[in-house]
Amino acid sequence: AGGPWEECFEAAVQLALRAGQIIKKALSEEKRVSTKTSAADLVTETDHLVEDLIISELQKKFPSHRFIAEESAAAGAKCVLTPSPTWIVDPIDGTCNFVHRFPTVAVSIGFAVDQELEFGVIYHCTEERLYTGQRGRGAFCNGQRLQVSGETDISKALVLTEIGPRRDPATLKLFLSNMERLLHAKAHGVRVIGSSTLALCLLASGAADAYYQFGLHCWDLAAATVIIREAGGIVMDTSEWLLRAPGRWRRS
Ligand code: IPD
Image (tube, rainbow, N blue to C red):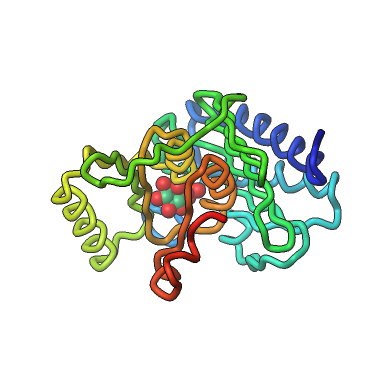
């Protein structure tokens, strides 16, 4: 039997699949590319088209709901998470991959009520893999249950990270020093796939053991957070970690 947000979840799945078809088709076509906050922060007409499609369809079905979405935020919309049902949307996660026809791109749709994440839907557009997580009901990829790896030893771990769009000296220094520390700790490997949501889905699948990134936005994280938690993993903000007792982060 479905939970109270089942209709919303079903709508998210349908829209992610529909958006995924548009993105997959557009991947091999010519694109008009613009930049946002830096020369490596890219956006295309497909990002806008897909975001408009997702929001307009959801608004028709759920007129009282609120939205936080990547390209609307870039255009100046405020990102406020109120207790109202709120959709958190990244129309194309991996836009840089998309621009280069590197086939690791996803649609990410998260949903929160009372400021708590209820479900997440992430669709890997080219491999046609649908990742879903519903609070208290598990995480799945194309119907198969997901479980994180459980590895705790960094010297036995495969670690995922993302570079992000910033190229200022301080950001680069931090990125490279973290990479150096991981390799000194003899991690089995470090991977950068160009889509934070899909990296997080791989983590939920147990295909990698850890993920970290600086400068993630809520639309990169919302849907994936539910999927990771439901796969038995934890998601933490390390800046908050410093302020809290470690036990607070354990799953209850
Ligand atoms: C970006 C990608 C990238 C990550 C950035 C994200 P976008 O999302 O996930 O891998 O490094 O931090 O903002 O712009 O392609 O939706």
